[in-house]
Image 1 (cartoon, rainbow, N blue to C red):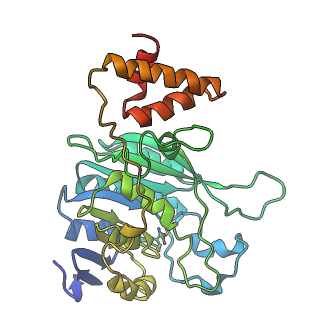
Image 2 (spheres, rainbow, N blue to C red):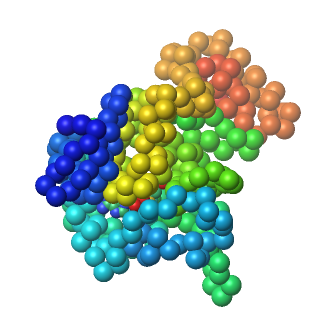
Length: 336
Ligand SMILES: C[S@@+](CC[C@H](N)C(=O)[O-])C[C@H]1O[C@@H](n2cnc3c(N)ncnc32)[C@H](O)[C@@H]1O
């Protein structure tokens, strides 16, 4: 259900729905129970409150807080374990079989989140380290510059993972390393966005980070949920990539500030800005080699190797030229 304003028992909540997107200004645990049916969400990307006095974080960070939207609601450390179990149980319920969840967490309360995930039937897919450039003041110990991203999935259905959505399987960098492999390594170096003079939520997640998770783990038209919207960054990228956003933010101050911007977004506005992966299809892969083709490939291989080109690069070049897979080509060159 989605009305402009509604009253549930004693709690006053605001629901805003437009073009397949639904946002609720209320506690996500109660809100999920009220509004989100079982198995109706394809992907959850969320960054829960830290439980470390996040409403006072500006005391540690070196930045001008006058542009940070206030109203952030923190969860007391002593209830963080139960709080994590409660919202993660709701996340498990609303995911479809095969649906996936990414939880962004610092290290302080990571154990609570991991324990809560292990108490569900969800299964771990990856434990990603996000390295960023946003250190806290420290002189007597190492500078903390990473977050954890816990990537889990609900069993019982097909998990979406679009392997070639950003880099083709054969795309290489200048040193012939696979760009696809590098993009799928589980340490991500993505800087936080520097937005001087622009109003933002505390610790907004970067568009690049969100785009990566959404591209790999969902398709256009899917429903992507964020239980802790904060600056609505997940919702913004979700709409921008042509998916439907659902989410909760308990702070009225933050919710009211951001909701207007959400309505002004054009669905799919980010799609044209995405990098297009090179197509991987080798049209001749699997076809029988003629004798003439074998001789030409062998002669060209030898002449390229004689120029000093490495074997790996030579096979890459010939694979593109003959539109053949690397393994098949290497076999032919060995005389197989
Ligand atoms: C770490 S911030 C999320 C930041 C967000 N990912 C972004 O990029 O801006 C966590 C948010 O959860 C909100 N919050 C705290 N408790 C909540 C609850 N029970 N239900 C929904 N939102 C809650 C806080 O007010 C805060 O805005």
